[in-house]
Image (cartoon, rainbow, N blue to C red; front, side, top):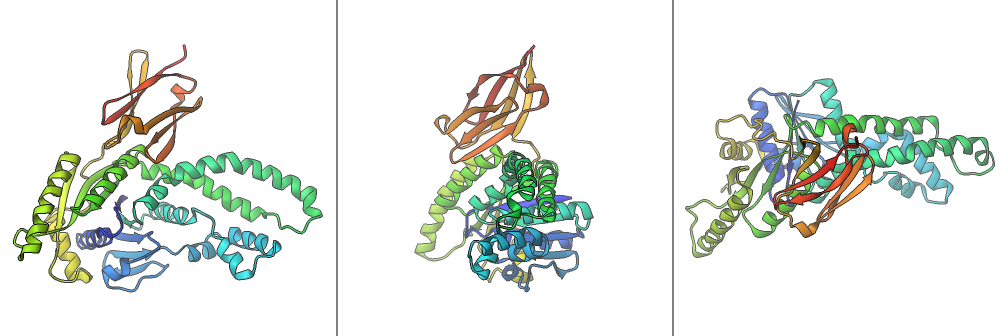
Length: 390
């Protein structure tokens, strides 16, 4: 199953680009799903159809979904929601507020990722296109399998033991509801599925990220940071789509001035991101919504080519060996040496911090207990060296 994740700064037009890709994919005969995980949904507006928290068939070969976490909690994790609501009520929280507070932090990410798993298992779609929230939320989405697995692994076993003891002791004497067996099974189900989700997201041959930006300074800078952090999370960025490009035949002194500014930014984009594939979508003189506008955008971006093509599948993170030295290579574009920190987490992991993001990286079994010799950084790649214990 091909998975294409569109990401970019808010307002750059990634929803339109994602919708245009989905329409072109469906027209080429691929069974296509486009899913919006941005809480400020605009996918329905772009497709010019009414979407909901249930899967809607837009046209032949094209389905769409706008994720609603309240709906997901009610239908898929009702036991967790009911328990948290009951706990809040026992502490004097009013009913309506209790239901709102029952939505655990990160459950939007869990729901979105589990839809991907569901689509993979069912074989219902050839292509899944994900229209994400702005950059920061997307980084949380893509890092969630790592983060959630760490918390659940550390806490879940302890929680089960505590609940078992509480049922036999204080649970009989206090008026605080304890999580039921169903609640514990739901949490365990989340834990068991997260590792599979991680494998799908790190399938570099089929799951890739396309960054959307405008030829302006702020979107360019944010895209650089996003590219760095996506490499840290071992996600493959396959191409760049520059949207809202002014055509060369613009009229008027103001627009000609904007065109001159744009030429400078386009040069900056090419110098910064090449050899990454770069595609363009020019500003249209008609409203960009519905079939006509989206098809025009798809023509500009893809021409006659297949919009599901994988433009790059290189993993930004890999291991090599030279003699008795093993090396972990991590792409680190657009970051300075002073912004990188490296720690040994435990015998089986290391922690890398780049800018505002931090990731614990599990080492292969062959490097558990290996001595970390240090690291080198050449301005584009971080290389961490290890020596195995003899």
